[in-house]
Image (tube, rainbow, N blue to C red; front, side):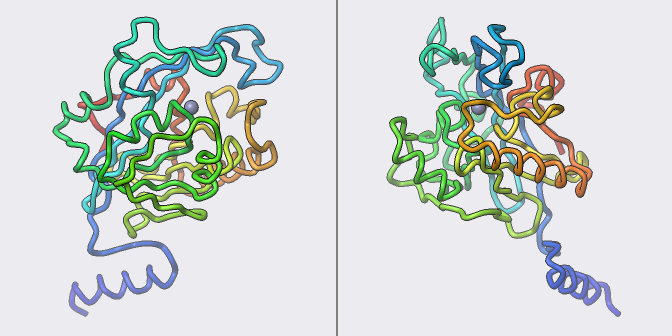
Length: 274
Ligand SMILES: [Zn+2]
């Protein structure tokens, strides 16, 4: 059998088995970690009921830009860029959290030669302010969000700044973004009604699971703690189980967005992961 025929056969078999293997796609080329700010929480027990009450906690806040041969996907948009110009940061959540930003998302994208118009998809883990703060920077991108999240956020007091020119794709569950199985949105509700996480396959680094705010920091992951402000406790616990089985199944690394010690070990843009 000629090489081309073998490839076609393998692709057909993979497609039948639902493996998402796609001969025509080179997959993910790069992943950049972008500094999308910092949250200073007054009281850790807001996220870990009964644990470290009254003790402050600092969270990292990252955005991730994924370059696939079929387009660019930005995962989360972070704290608003305007916060970078506020010397004392921005106080939110009735004083419980202070946002800070050392540099803007716009400047970091510019540094790696990316214009907002180059970004095909902006996918948000959920609609809290430290994740959708710069969604309006991308007026020509398609927004990937769970329908349940969109409806909930738009009915609430703090509506995300979506712009009229954006195409909003309201998902119902998982989505294979580029159709080759390498970038997959997985529904992980609980923190909010339509919270979602992202599973990414990099050629050298392997599988990564970007958990959004399904979990906030390592100790909460270890003990499967559910923050008191979460929308639904049972959904949260089910989503943590789902993440656990995905990690096991793909031998993936768990990247916990808000875990500051873990973020401190990461290579930030302009460096990247392959
Ligand atoms: Zn968050």
